[in-house]
Image (cartoon, rainbow, N blue to C red; front, side, top):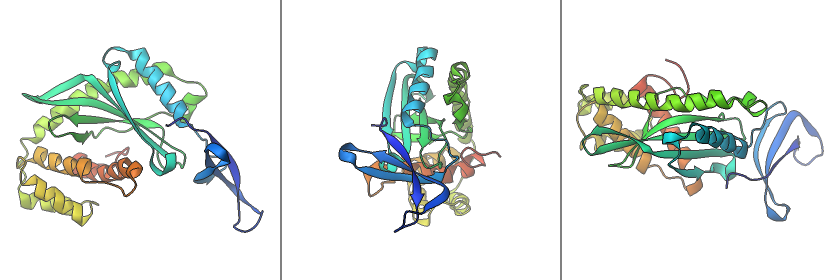
Length: 262
């Protein structure tokens, strides 16, 4: 699915053959000479194919081995493949939040042809009892373009290994959140300061009423809504909608934007 042919072409002024300086269009090629434009970018923009990102990431996973071998993989390609989300759930890395309440480590690999998302990966916790995707407030691990001309397998493998202690640390933060009491009124005030749409805020508050009255409970309510309520008209775009929604939660719970600094 993610390994499809692309080509680059010049961009012309509508109705003419005049090229627009400094621009190029990224096209997805289909059968029977059909093409779909994915993005218009600067001519200097270095295109990194989804397949190259996946192949090198999985090479690093296989090199590390151990807990990274037994994995379940799902892929989403919003906007005809202009963006890629590929989630790896590691079935042998499951930590116990409470007795019987397990959270698995996930790494979500991303890439795009429009320059909106860098090649890299994020850490996610997958809580089994409610199928929530628990966003982790660590900075996105970028896979820099230089890796594709001189691939640094050792560096990427080390960062993969580091994801397990980062995941363990996140779990400890979540446990501490149980000690931070939050009332319904307090939750309303927190959400009002965010970029979360008003309708989604109401859904989170309604869900929060059935959760623990603390920061962990609000986190559960928010991630449950983003994991279950967000659906795009075109199903292939749903993961992008959820990813965008998750970005509005990071400042509330971790104090910064996804991939940013405090």
